[in-house]
Image (cartoon, rainbow, N blue to C red; front, top):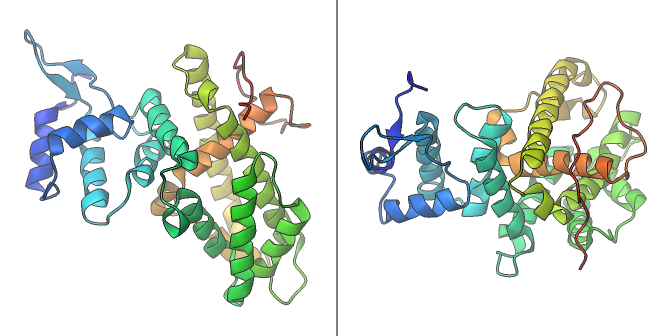
Length: 306
């Protein structure tokens, strides 16, 4: 840590103004608000003098400026901004600690069932669904087929954990946009079925939010496991991409993922991984890949009841 050029809160506020990212904003107040929900981390130490100010890892400065850019220049809402620290943590960025990722993810998750959250096209779920539909859709997919898949995904997500759409119905709608007007390949069928599975996993994580956000060594170990599993999946996907890109029809889906794409879906992707671990611990997964590290225990884990 001694080799790092640690930064103070005043340094970060000044940098925000210098970059002209503080127009009309009270950056001091914004800093405190963002730190409270995990967009920014906690200081790693204090200046070496009596009453010295808190000092942050320099990567928190870069994160702060990125957050201000997306907030000021691109009009991103705070729940969407939580993807930045979560993505940095998932990728192992130095200076972004697990506790910060927990708080940021927890805020994002809390907005999914916030009665005051934006509805319609501005909702977090709708944003994620739109990204998924556009990713899946063949250039030949009709507007009506994409509209039907959007509607079914919205219904399935909104009704979870008692999902009101059957796996077969959702898969058929997905195949209508993946492989319109032709017989789908086996790999395309697997991709279509995975939409339902993702909803099951994210629902499990959402139901167990309190346990997942506990500040305990046990929970932190579970999160570190989730990060390792996610990084292993990214490495495996990268290794498999050359072969998958040659697959008829669906090869277009397997272009290398960009950092922007990964970041925009960081919280949703983490939620899926957490849900996989939760369902494994609850005994809801019949099989576990033999080469995959199983999740560490989380005692007193249970789904919320409503």
